[in-house]
Length: 530
Image (cartoon, helix red, strand yellow):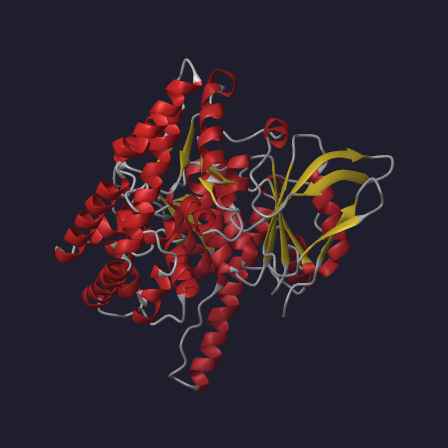
């Protein structure tokens, strides 16, 4: 079942904007008091039974009002009590959810006994509680969940004698328990509306938790209401709705849907209370470019913004850092190396613009460790796959050698002329004289022959790293058949596999990040951490 087009509440002109049905992440942002929660409450009311609301603030504390939606924890609990579930009244939604988990566990065991009596080969079915415990211990690896006398207990060591009840969990731990448990009760293909998903949570686990929850329920569409730009930026491929204000008298909102992956403007940035991570400006259109898909998963400690051209990245990084005393935030940029020489690269790095040791972002996807990791994941021989790709790239480069040398020569001549022509001249005669000697000084043929010699040496020595550093060729990725060698249909599937690994909290994800970080001469991450 596909999701339907999501109609948003009416704006001041009576218009209802909409979100396409294939959009699985929507982030509603805005400053405090702009009506974000009312905005999503209206969405929930319009969706009716398709909506499933989660709020840690509402779940952790006793409330007079319960959630009336038919699929809510409150409704499920009331139905279970009406059906004869024993136990005293639970004062909040968290405790009601935990009672439901234990009831489901008991019913599963009873069902297993009945089935086992009829068929001894019957296996015990996994339960919601199994899922909750597994995911809880992924988020808190030093914590253990126990089941004793029909209750959930927790321990922070292997010594189970130190166990304690859920009442003694911190607010953050309770929030995690609530979110994990509650999502298991969401109806199939529900639109899950989460109010303040970062509330009570330490920033180090917020993104990881919601990435795992989304993976747990890929059938669900998620709508997050937040004023935290750190979290908003972490929801890649999301539609972002900026709520500016609410007119209570007319029950309308002033809001807009931001263009897909558009860099957040200064106006929005200053209006929304939130991000305090360094900003990373990157090239690309923010929607289809590899940069916008890859770099947010590599540089997770940054707020990544796509700006389009390399010149805009360089200028924005400079401008943003010039205003550091005002906003107290660091800014960096990433641009492709292209055909820049070492002096150009050193200059950009000195301005906090990172330049990789590969010609363009596509070349990152065929770094040795990236190829080997994907091949291993696909059950292929990593060494064989890499050697095949390496030989193919060297062969392509050898075929394009003279063309590539000419392109590098053209770039060097262009840059040199730009620098030299900017010199000051007292009169036109001096400029003419300078121009007459400039061609002789630049000597493009000598430059070209020097590039040819270097490039031939790379091929003869099998210097794969140097080839990736100088070879700009968009057709290289499909041409080397890395996707096919890994058992994938095309480069899109190959890229998707890399991105899926990077979404994980695994050693393979760390290997990929370190391989890519090494292109920027950054310190490697520890194995098993992201």
